[in-house]
Amino acid sequence: MKVRLSLAGSIRFHEIIYRKADLQRMPPLDRRYFVMLGQLYNDLAQLLIQLLYHYPLAWAETEPMPLRARRSAAALMTLRQLAARIWEVNSLIDGQFNQFAKSYDRDKAIKPLVGKLRAYLQAPNAAKAVRHSAAAHFDQKMIDQGIESLGDEVELRDFFTHSAGNMTFDGADTVLLFGMVRSLEEVWGEKISEPFPALQRLALELRDGASLILDMVVPLLAAVYNRHLEDPFKTSTVSVLFDQPEADEVSAPVFICGPNEKDDEARAVSNASARRAELRYPGEGMTPWERFQRTRN
Image (cartoon, rainbow, N blue to C red):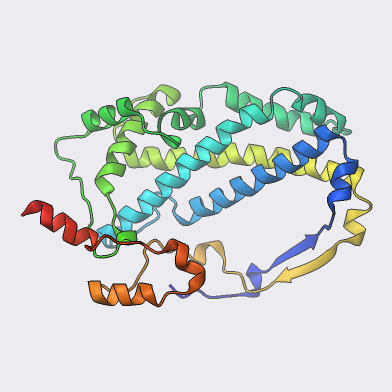
């Protein structure tokens, strides 16, 4: 997809440079949280970008079904990862975190932000429900519930192709989604008849949950900079990255387009760039589609 580039999408970066000695001058507790909060922010920001480009139901009804299936799969995967990361914040803000945050809260502006986040995590929430049922492991009970919840008229589709990276088992994700809906019903306290609007609602809740974390992290890290780095905003350099596409002008690619025939595909793989060597599909003599066909005969 070709996108229009414009200066309206430019991003200005204020670069803050520090070294190992700067970290070592910080109290151990402070530098640990400084690094962990930075990691957390990066993870959530990246997942939110992925969610933006694979937003549930963002595809048009006129798009081919394989494309719609892969977009939904990408959104579901991103939501599962986002739920897990949000829920892990429980352990980060436990223990000595209050002591750390309080020491930097001169204007008492950070405490309410921490309070909002704690209130969300302590109440029934979708991040916990998805984390415990579908984020990083397989819950057999949830799969059974998903299959049981399917209507008799629901059609499950899987898409086979000659390229391993482009196959899509949409039926598996559909069952997973129906199973997740059963867990979300308990959180939201209502019966859910249609799973895809629930996916959209889940996306909005996790977006808001992540935003609570990002809102808390920024003032905390800024306070650490101000206390432990020497005039970081005076000595920072400025970089400007031009011609970035607007959010509504681009969508993430979901398929790896390449040769369709087996011989051509093998030739393309053998000529691939060396830096992508680790991503090559090793192959087992047959393409996924050929293997599937053999099992039917």
